[in-house]
Length: 193
Image (cartoon, rainbow, N blue to C red; front, side, top):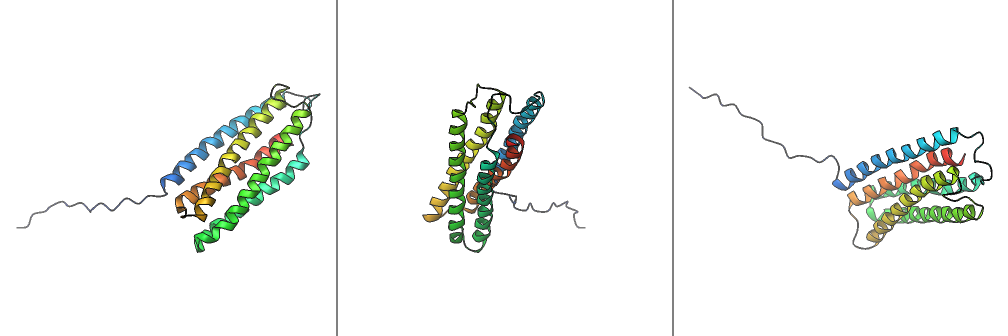
């Protein structure tokens, strides 16, 4: 008589859905989306309390000039998409579009810095009004994220030129850059217009 032995199937090796670097960046992005949503909500509530915006005596934000800057940032995001497509064919082909994305990102941050200097000279400061406080908080936080993402892009680019960069590191950096690019039009439409 044969024994009935209850057997369980062997465990299959656990497959990771995404590399840790990518998962970490996606979690970070989720928290940052919540932070920006909170900032924009507070700004919207505060702005609704005023009859005119910006408050009397405060300069208007340069929406037209910033629209040009916005197009540079969006073009940078498109270049990162081209870099991702090139990476699939050959990682070496991703270098040029990554460099272009990096240069466009640097242009964006430098343009924002020049805009800030001009606005400060016009009297818009952190303490001049709610308009100034929210502008520098929201746009400054985005600038901080953009600067960090540019640094990451620069590191990835240098590694591409040297010994190479891993696919998870390249993907995580791209996702961070896509976040910086994607959140900007929302901030632009809400804060500048």
